[in-house]
Length: 335
Image (cartoon, rainbow, N blue to C red; front, side, top):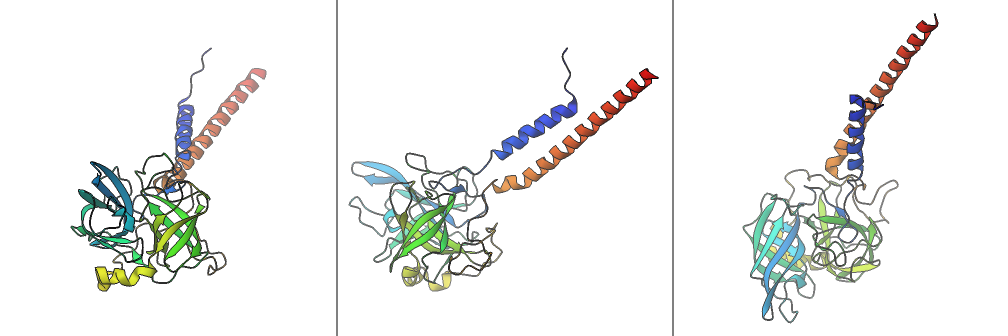
């Protein structure tokens, strides 16, 4: 005999399938072992796209990551602008170089797109500034950290680079937590800590921001990606310190343009702020926001869980009523 499936049972099964799908929707890993960044977080992050770079008798395309530091200037690695001989140059090297700002997911049309019209190279450092036109005035730039970074402090990295060795470039901004393991007058050694020990900068993450978040939830730029081994890997990558070239940056872009007060609270700031281990107070967390469901799902999962609970309770009540009716019929037959 074929038993009919009750409507409540079908609904319960459907809810279980939905819950299973949501539980599988954990962040994808990239930067080489990083996490997807939710839309709206770290809007200062920039995807620099170079189209038709002269390469001998041919042309090629490439990309870097950067940060918006004023409405008209993006900071990135110096080697993102170099000639055929590998020399850093103070000019765009591609036929067209665009800066996409505030677009966490590159498959969308959010944010702004501007064109790089001029380049300045920092003396003695793998740092460059790209001037964009038109200026981007409706996205808050990142502030520059003026204090010298300390060995042991934790920083965040955001980048649009490759997702690993022989893997494609990220279409969604990626992030990870790194520890400063060494320091010289102009460079930092930074090593991946979260999501894993092999979290590392990859190709096209060049120029990407290593940053902290201040007590108000606002980001502060500490360094930019310079070089490192093939990814993913354990051990240190090399980053160029921003405080070491802060005077040059201020002179180039205008001191009054930097670190302007934020007009509004930061969009979706991290729940906790990376900080120095040596200065952390008891109980203070120094990590990325807790891993797990991407932000849009965090509100949905409790709702689905609640629906599952309601459905389960209804099923149990209906089953209890059936058993009660069956018991009454048995007792009536015995009379």
